[in-house]
Length: 454
Picture: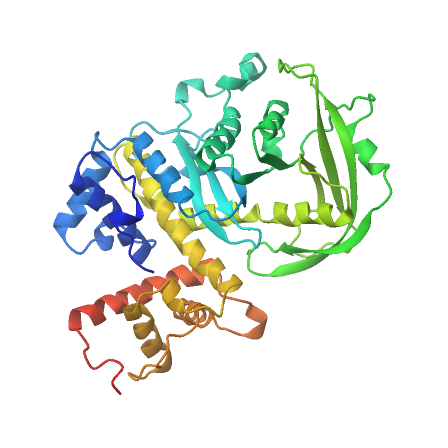
């Protein structure tokens, strides 16, 4: 991948030019050596020490890094409409002695929680990380969830959903149509009204069987509707690499949802469209349960085609799960040995930028396989890749396509390339890319001037 520079972050200002340069240097090192320790990412002790000092530096604030992520992500969003997937990610540091860690979902676990929002095209290509907020749950608050109902919405952890959506809305502005996608944890009455912000819509998976204005139950009313269509839905399997066809029935219904009794929201009801998908084909071996999705959206749905478009967009929510997979398993963020939770939070933000770049490489190659690989790889990288793959020093006159290059990178990472294997997945690509970067570094050091001359 092309190295990022300070120019790629036009609003980068950490208070010192050297800090700015160290910031981009760390991202490049992580990208070139995903999964490596900090000493292995750096070429010498000076750079290693400077990286540790960057994370410890009190003048490098978490808030500043979050703003940098947002502005960098915004600059990568093009067009007048974008999908934004939101979710939480629990990052475990159970084996770490770092001070200031909080508790996780499993109360014995210790770590940091990151709320992430990623931009996605209509074709399912991840564009950028638009928003990230990391935080810890104070240990002294563990076990006090019983007081949740008495807590104001603005003070609850679930308020992060609203904050994430509102921040992205402000970041992208009114000219971009923003479609926010989230799972069942975002089925929050107060959150539904984010859609009334300018040029904004919601598409979430429902968790509750809410009351409607006619006193009926939401999903009971939808189940009474006639089947609008039967279709084959392509769902990623548990590996995320293969698409499996699942036959489903589709129903949709315009509803008016009443305010819950426990809510203090000023509005007594909200109009939305409910979409139900129910699997009718046999359960797949990898499925834990039959597919039964219940979606709520503020998007206008008047036809089966529009309902299915919402379903297809919701399927792209899977990409944020893959982002978390690359962040945790690819960059090995949970293996970092830093002494303070705040230092780990800073590292999470930088590692996240690198993780998104790895994702973009994989998914861009699937969507536009025929474009030149120089869109993503440097000439030195694809040259070395060609030599490693074809066992020759004679290079082609034109660079290979992006699809070819990623397949070759996948093979370096252990992908067999059989027809039944599908395209290279994230793991083999980040493994192969690390090997490619090592080889390209050796090529650069040795200055193979005869490369490509036969």
